[in-house]
Length: 106
Image 1 (cartoon, one colour):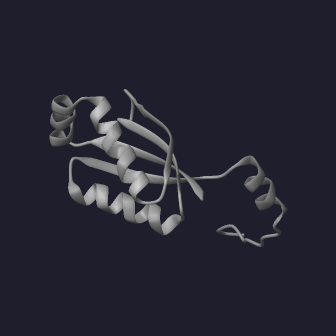
Image 2 (spheres, one colour):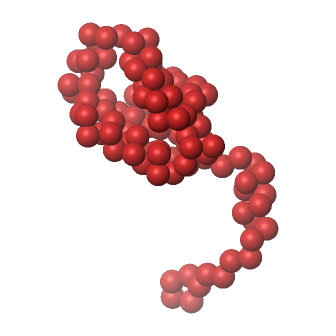
């Protein structure tokens, strides 16, 4: 399983739906969608800043994460973006890989 952050912002219609349904129902619906995709919700919080919801979850792979985000956005009401998350150990492994790169203008 891979870990992801789903950052979502409600559209005007989405905010109207949230006002009607309430936060608990929307959280339940989001959790069910993630679980149906073979995932597990680690945390789900509402925010008052740039995004309206933040969900940290495990999903089987990147294709599943993309499919879930596409389905959510296509349904309307919510603009969802997916951020793959790395554990400290995965970063340790990444920094050990030797990469070659030439910056622009070098």
